[in-house]
Image 1 (cartoon, rainbow, N blue to C red):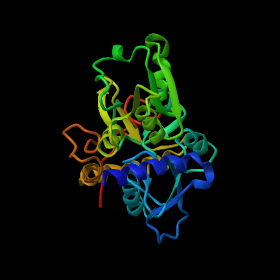
Image 2: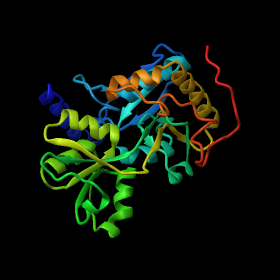
Image 3: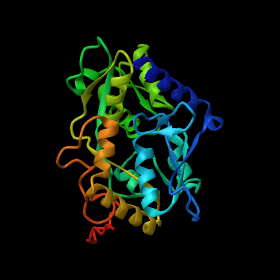
Amino acid sequence: MRRIMLAITLAAGLGASLGATAQAQTVVGAVNSTLPPWRCGVDGTFRPHAFPTMDGKTQGFQVDLYDEIGKRMGRRIEITSASFSGLIPALNAGRYDFLCAPTTVTPERAASLLFTEGALYTELQFGIRRGTPPIRSEEDLRGKTISVNKGTPYETWVNNNRERLNLTLLAFDTQPDAVQAVLQGRAYANLSGNTVVKDSAANVPNYIADFALPGTRFHWATPFRQGETAARDAMERVLECMKQDGTVARLSEKWFGSAPKPGDGEITIFPGFGVPGMPGHDATPHAVTCS
């Protein structure tokens, strides 16, 4: 089974590197809806959030999440896989209505996009090759090469700490390629989201989850373009109901292997609309109303 999972992961990285010709589309939600479909983009190599099936479609936590959102909102959702580095520019250009990719909410992004509250939290974590001395602090990274998925907060962290820790950055279009750089000895460690690092450790031989950066907990949320307040608020209302009735928690346990703990994003309904403390947050109280 581990060899099959590794083959799928490697195929995902190859497919994404081929560009637009390898893009796959998966239709979820209320597929018989007469309303115009919503278009969303996702990094289809970001297992377990989104990764390819044997028949060329996309599966994962994100797909199941938006399938349920679409059904509850009565909308068909067309999910297109593409490299993450191009997703936000494509959203702003109008190619997508929102992003299905788990998008880390940072102050810089929230200043130019409109986010729902997070469906879950993420934190930055390193993965290393088995046999490598464990990372116990940032100082253990000094002078090392770090691989990341291009266009992500992981790339930003390496760039922000490059001079302080004498880091070398290796940025790739896909997370599987970043993992392979570690296994091949081209990078000392891979930096990504904790759910992705742990999943790779469970399915890719000789790759293990290691040090998680303290103080790097962020919302993973849905971005819309600026001005799409009504759509953002409508989706957030549905997400709140899915948290309240345990749907998000069940999907989290299915794809990440453990039930959310008290205070985790999968079960926390945040005040207002958007991410508290970030640009674009509407702090106006509203009741959670679910049919």
